[in-house]
Length: 255
Image (cartoon, rainbow, N blue to C red; front, side):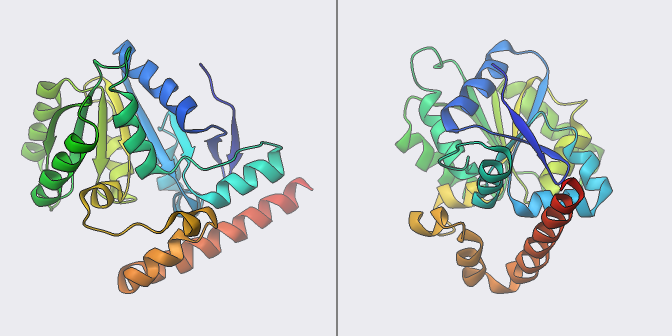
């Protein structure tokens, strides 16, 4: 199965929905051939990839970029004539992948959780195991919070090889997780690797998610900024502004 995609700010964004995206990545996972990188991208990711050429080259190594933010859905619908009803939100896609991987025909798929803290990983495994008992969690690993040396990288690779997982969910924050996945792509064991942002903290219950109606309005960024203003104010102010600027500039060039 191949997905339609359209270039936004230089990145190919898939025009897809949750189930279709899952069928694609589960097909890759079942094949057991090679390493695939998947990103749930919002305006922050697109603006940063356009603004920083080095990060743009990182994102060029990803095999599938999903429309995580509602503004991306609106642009895909209006500019490219798509009829998407919803985004493919990273935390929700992760939850549905755990649910659907336990279905008949997908039951052999194994999940691995990489990143965050041991405390959050423990709670995350507990919650996921309770909510999706048919899903198979092959393991979890919390690397040290420092610049990794050769020994740290070797330990991560060994944990991944031993787990023999099909879906590897990574949570180090953007842009760190994307850079790490792209940098290690040639060393990673076969599997589908996801850059999943704050999904670990959400599903572990460590961070509150925005209500569904706020998400549908595309205002989740505002909700999160109100909860963590010191950490997120500059990020959202700068990158949301850059996204709009680049989007308008690209439109002028093609008009």
